[in-house]
Image (cartoon, rainbow, N blue to C red; front, side):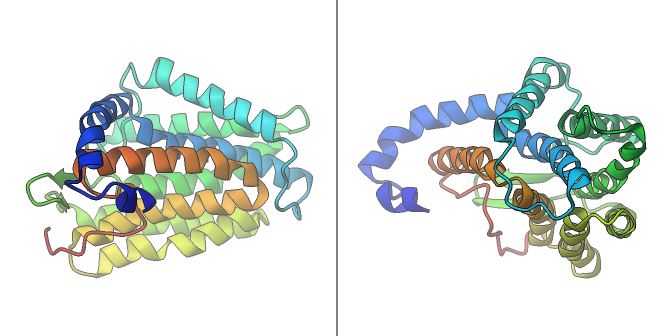
Length: 270
């Protein structure tokens, strides 16, 4: 990351900006800013599905970016004015019980509908949201494993491997359902994204219990789905990049680590 080169750890400039950005990071954590990756991806998934209903062969379409950003803004307002204050959306913070899992399913459907809603759509088209919901639930299952950052060691660790097999098997199964439904509905976006994503929970299931497998399984499927959505809605790259690099810079000054990141901690902490 360029910031690492401009502000090396323990340098004067790094120490100058560390305190204010650390305080800013505490505010971002309290507001759940990182959750917007999922919120926005669900919303844009609805938009991309609607585009595909009109023309399956549309790619790299910049038209509609303004309406898309308005829908992202509405989703963000819903999250910050209602869901976050009432503690209705909190994947990754604790294990969800059956009721909470069901409520997140309903909220995911709501965000998909915000993106999908168009005067030309019919109620019959609603069924084509099912593979996206299945993929979301498959990814949500991975967040049942709570990963915590150990400040003393500077690594991410997971101490909660109980029920590993049923949780990860459900994740793999839901991704497979998303793929099959994508084939059935002739949706190349969800099908391709699902095929690329399913190995991550599968590896976490079959290989030894290392935190790096969970890191990959949590981050990469969401990233993969977002990138496949950008194939049809490239304007989505801009808000994604702003959010991604804002969090990386703040966390670098706060913890001395690059997070969120495409890399993982290659330690054997379990």
